[in-house]
Image 1 (cartoon, rainbow, N blue to C red):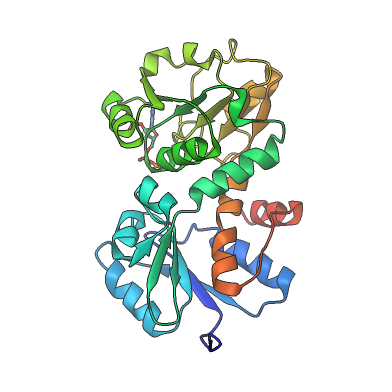
Image 2: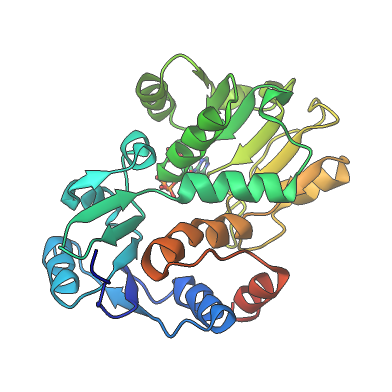
Length: 280
Ligand code: ATR
């Protein structure tokens, strides 16, 4: 088999893209591994995704991370897709093979579960149902991750009930829709409670949910990481529950891309967290 002679280059594609932290993460890993790679930030207007992917392929890029609004288009543009990308219905990582074939993956689910297990090592899928708040794209990745990890049941609640029901149809009977007004009572017996809504983010109202009835060993996690300590996580800690912040999901989801494009396993360290937080 011949060596892949393409340059060690990948990118992140989105619109807008200035805010993306991915270049920082990759710069950290290039420095750590000594790999002389390059990772570009490329603004791709809605409608320009397919043409940009062709250009990257021609230029010998090994792949790309994909962010809003292109995650669905990226999946559709690929020649084949991982089970995770198919189940979630979106791709955040594309791997371009030496002959130009494009493989789509979704590593958000991986990032979520790795972060949860790293931040709450005692959590087990058997601990009880998961309670997921929100029904957007992030919720799809979280639900896939939890079901794949072996959680028996996901209690799903969202302000707009129709979206909850759509996801229950998509994922099947292990996902149980719960009305938004009943979210506080749904913490009873839940082994893990996950916020996937934008509530709690800087500039947004906090997520209002009472954690009083959560089991003593429940884990609370938030995919919001600005601020790092959301009101939800602060309330969980005040109640004595394990709380896992959302930054690790962002960091862990980048690992499979680095492995696929640059051939090395990388890890999430306190130094990487510091580098990303200091640049914020
Ligand atoms: P993403 O793809 O990042 O998950 P999204 O599709 O815009 O983003 O979803 C945002 C989530 O936050 C949704 O679950 C949304 O609820 P709706 O489906 O009802 O819109 C939720 N969300 C945003 N603002 C909210 C608010 N003020 N109260 C309750 N939920 C809110």
